[in-house]
Image (cartoon, rainbow, N blue to C red):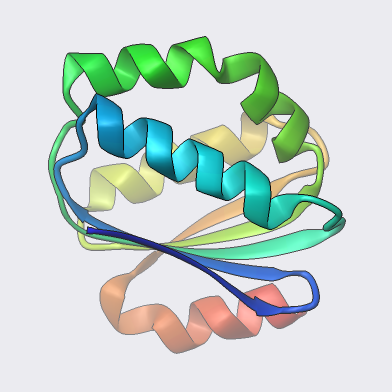
Length: 121
């Protein structure tokens, strides 16, 4: 399941669980681009539970959309990733170091309140 909601003037909440295929990836990337249209200084709460590696087709769709995704990423200031797996938190922290001007921080599922507070700072 994938859910993408605008929850404030510059706030987007994204929830994901399970596995995603190429059709699902295409749908979520299109929706992500539509929802971020006109938004700047975006803060995102990204919640991942029961993560499964996306299908090869989904990965290919994402790679094909990489230039558009990189442009969208420039509009995002902070991403709090609330996840159920420590290794995803570590990847989130690493990604934060790779994108100048973008703060990404990983949180455990039971730290959702801390993630909200960090986004609000």
